[in-house]
Image (cartoon, rainbow, N blue to C red):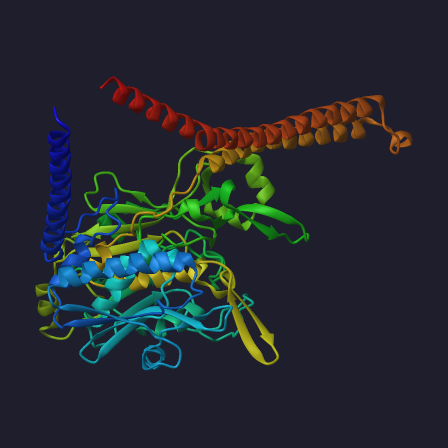
Length: 624
């Protein structure tokens, strides 16, 4: 073959390659133009982190007013932290989902509030909070939703609430559709509205409890007396706080409120330490009839013991002890999939009861808060007499995780199938027939009920500390007791679709293996500690018996038997202490071993696997 022919072929190949590249480039540009006009979105995450839930879709479909969402984000700020930038991108992408599904009813506007700009003035006007940077500049990252003359704002997006992002956005979209203040009715045997409570060192005396004051900032709160026999149908949420000695007429009103699809929160208590009543009147909550209709059970004569959640308290002898009746609930006890409890970190529950699902109940039952497996039940009356040491000595874990708070949903049947109970007072003519005509035996609408096995956690002293500094009253929340109530109220006063929205999946998955190792070690530790306590008590009893057998001349001398008993106990104590140290040493060794395995996988094994894959591919290519 001549040089000219070879040159011609090479030239043809070059032209063909160049033309092919040009054609491919044109095709890519055309595909990009076509798909830029087509709204195709695919959520590849396993938990659909970037997709709207069915509840949000329903709310957006039922919008009566167009909603404008103004996002104020300082995207040009040079010193904005990287994690905020990444989070902002996810938020803006997620807001696109709202705008796309809203089909013209939702409009998202992005504003960049630069310093001293008109956008910054609008951000401040709408209540968007700016975070100060080290440079002195402010970073804004919040939004306001507006519909007609209503507006609601998220002053600052919190990355720690990313799991609640959909709920927070959908909630304000839903709230700007309503114009009236929502109403909460409260039935309580405790002095939550400010009646002086004798025997309690309550700051403020006749002042309302703090949670009532906080609720009044967002809702119209009404007190419903125990003597009432009706509940206003306009009530958006009903609260029962330590209900006891309720009349049949009031229980019937509560029953019909739920049957009609009302939202209810029940704070029952086996032994209320905040109850100012004395003697036999200091009773447990009593709602057996209504609980049976709602498909749950609560033994009001039983209190929960939980040594994994025991609270350190100071005794009358000025000693610090861990009391398993007073529960310091930690994150692993909360349901992280529910909006109410997903972000809670700690709660203090003084003497709580447990709730169980009744056998055969067909209603939805979801646990919001659980005890640890290192727990059991005890008689509630022992609260008056038993100390922590007595509970520890008699304790035997059942291995069951008891429900402390639950959420129920369904179309509930009435607890009064025979209709309205007869009133001791003779009704006005015609009124009785009218009331009977309104009786509902079966559920009219889906109702939602939250039942909590404690009422004392609402008392101020168990979640807020107050002090006076230079004439200013300063309050500091030290746990999430109030947040549980406010979260529940906010969720229940929303629409049925809003209630169904759950937390988003976790963007960061926690590593819990170390926590499991620690709990296992603590369980072994407790068993040996209990054995040592029993041995000490037996030794003391033997020493007392030997002391009684001595005559008066030997009272201040140790007998040979006493010395032997003491020596035997000290030897056993040293042996058990060595075992406890061995448990702790093995725990540290297990954690270190687990860390070494992870380091090996991350540093060496993955590199080795990638290298092997590369060599195998090279061999495959070479053989071809």
